[in-house]
Image 1 (cartoon, rainbow, N blue to C red):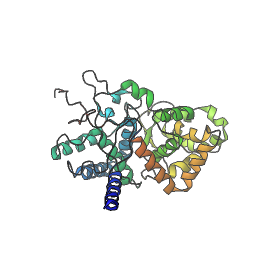
Image 2 (tube, rainbow, N blue to C red):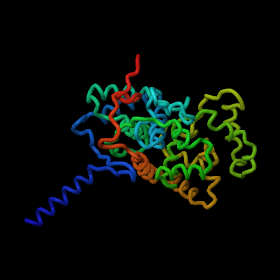
Image 3 (cartoon, rainbow, N blue to C red):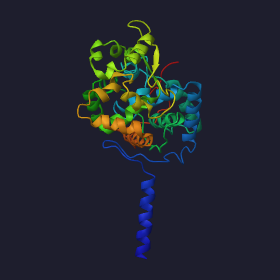
Image 4 (tube, rainbow, N blue to C red):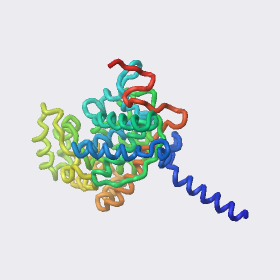
Length: 338
């Protein structure tokens, strides 16, 4: 009898472990199938609407993925990036890394409205961000993973935090490493998550300084690929066309694959923060990782999934913390006039 009880207990623990996602060092537990009873169609509703949005505009996949990243790096994955300015809240949307570049808010509004109709005040905006990031990657040919759910939404935003903690497109390697380490992410996570630049586009203002910086011409890395920089200059002159956009990956800009790393090795990374993974890695450890991902897409996918799950658990609010917003743009206590 005792053997049977022990076996049942072990099975129960295994089942519980399978239903539980990883927790962050400073956050609460997240669970798979969190909405199985309270909103069984939640993940399907999110996926279908992301699919429609990406079919209308393929670039939207990268924009939705980027929103999750920009949210998690400021106070944690709590949907603070979605808040509009209201009352004492100064929106993160107005911060430098997001202003005139963060996109996809209307897609989230539509998804939230449908979820509120189906399951009122049940699915958090923070969970929506985590789900749309996963679905956007998969819809562009990338890997799929199970998303731990159960996040609550923040009651505040951090304009200063957005300016401070989101890495700039011209960041040095040391700055990138420090920025990721501040979030509990290591160098392997940095290189893996940088692979998200295999899809999407970037504005001229994000890389113009790099392509017109003559100092870079001194390095063999750039001398070998002057043609690439020349092409970029044709898209982005020294002045004007600030909002013109260029693919982050010129090979397969709409497909999530490992071509980003191949580009880096060929000196064809678009952003300065991409190229420093090669040019400023004096010990060669990061370059070795880039080579590994460039030669093995499955390894990249596996590493990317692991790092996305890790990032998606940064300082999450759970239980009695935060709230489930009815409108992702405002805390529930706010009543903005129409």
